[in-house]
Length: 258
Image (cartoon, rainbow, N blue to C red):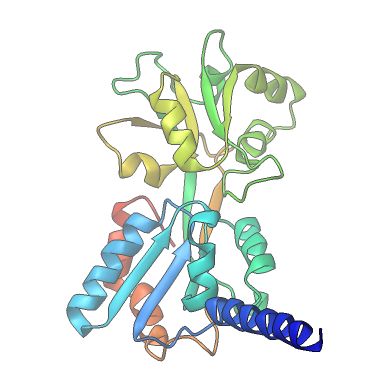
């Protein structure tokens, strides 16, 4: 009996050790690993490739829904990026290896209206989104999904303090997409307009045209990054490069600014 109990306890200890090793945070692996939501990934991949070309240091960019990359990030993330301040704050609830005081904003972009090519509904601004028979896609985390799009549509609708604007816009929303990737798919599925970020249209020029919001309506969200003292030793060099002129040109070409 004592032997069986000892055997069981030993088995539990071994399993716990395996689980601990499977999630142990060891970012110093010679690779700079970045993780975050889709959208900025296109620019980050380009910057990473240019940095690798110049230094020989490999950069890995993991992107998409958090569930897709969270396990790997807990093992080797040198950098986490957030596509808005509230999105970064939510990431920090999960990734305790990083500290809120170390978060740094590096680029910013504006919300726009993506319309179908050629703009068949002749949408020229916010007021046109309120017209009858206009099908709109918005991105909304709905309390269950981490996305930069959360609340953006209502921020835009409420900018002038009009309940009517808010109500009329909501009536035309056909999809509350959980994430910009899902929003893009819903837009391509036949919607007339998608309230999104400028870089999504800039990086998909064959799928959509841009209509700008007026100055009194437009909303901005940032791209922020966070690292820590345990990160790979070359992470600081990459971050300097990420904020430098060559990287800035790449981000500016995709609709970001400073």
